[in-house]
Length: 420
Image (cartoon, rainbow, N blue to C red; front, side, top):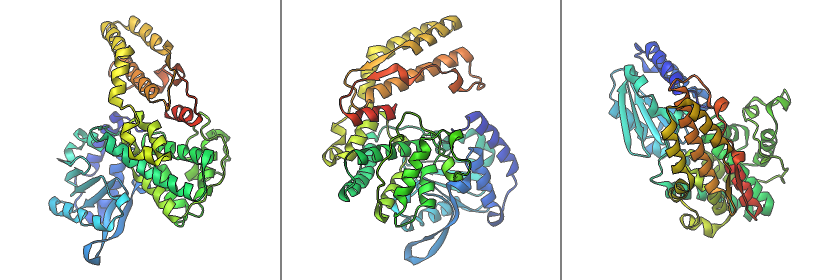
């Protein structure tokens, strides 16, 4: 899980003190960025590569100072150098980078100044090293805190569906069909979400596939099946000599990985598709789309018309706000200064039951659960104040077992369970 913003701020201040006098790019840059990533509780060595070779236009070779595939490219210069030129040098590398590995962010620095370009939203910020602690929230994508922006929600959802749809079509073409294919894909979808939303340490899955499987894809199926077994084992019940990289994957409750499946066969193209999907930022996907996304993966026609086949989060919110959410918030605001009443209200929230008699993939249930948890967080803030001294997991009493649904088809019901 991401470390707290309070801890990040503390580390950023220590980082600023440590590197206040740094000047030379060649001798100090890599150490600078290792420490920079550590501010956010992330290992730079694990997430990215230094001096990544790449072909520039005109067949010239270059070396990217630091490259986190699909996320971030860094170009570093000595103190006082031109950051505009550094940025131009960074984007000159783009023609030699695979499309699926192109970064969403570019960062340039000369130790004294740091400039971050958000390519996805066409934004940039610049600040001095001494002001780093006041700008840490711009780097939520490193820490695992992703700022959700749904203005391009449909475009993002369709792109994600197309990625997994390509993998589905290839597997189906080669004869991997039916229940086995559905189960394989729902597991992969869950893992991709988990890799980008804090369930696993970020990029654990993509790194495992990149480093541990052959480029021709011949052993990918074996590794996936073994990974599924690991995800179904509680950590303290695993063999003590298990591969350290595999052991980083936490146990996933809920029986998603319980059933054994037929070993799927992959080739290089299918491995590339899965890697491309792993570079996609799945945290951008609204939780309301998870079920419809899976259905679209399984059906080409559905995939092409994804926007017409699911209720948007905006419309779901209209329903649940009028059904119960507005009333609960009204009650909360009336008693928020009375701790005794707040504790009673908190227990009331934990005793509510929610039922969708035709739940499909569980979109309404998922959003209702999320909104109830957000309300609970407001209650906990009112009870405990703004001090960051408690862990939410020990004081939260809202549970997914408060949510019920009926669905006649097996896999929409399974998707609802996974999404929750």
